[in-house]
Image 1 (cartoon, rainbow, N blue to C red):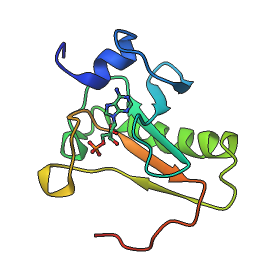
Image 2: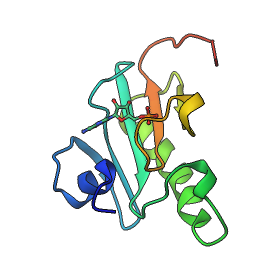
Image 3: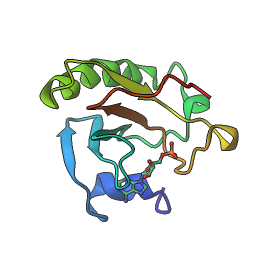
Length: 113
Ligand code: AMP
């Protein structure tokens, strides 16, 4: 996956503002934040998008959803936050490595589409 931006970030080849890391998950601040807190949580293993989740790799996705509340607490998001994963061009996915946006720190707009 030498051409994957987020694989390079995970490997440390491209700098990032890391907020969390363990054996299977990496999280860092979005370079173009859409909210006061905007963090990307990614599996270290390359999975292209939601369509790439299967029985062989779904444990890391479950783990990501254990990690997200840990990050949210550390970021002071007691008032709530949004978790978003864009899948494919119609959703506006721009990086082909599965990632979950954590957005918070303000009252978010209600529009979903
Ligand atoms: P998406 O549009 O859902 O694929 O999200 C990709 C996100 O990656 C966008 O919010 C970008 O701002 C963010 N992004 C792109 N390059 C970097 C980078 N080098 N470091 C941190 N975030 C990035």
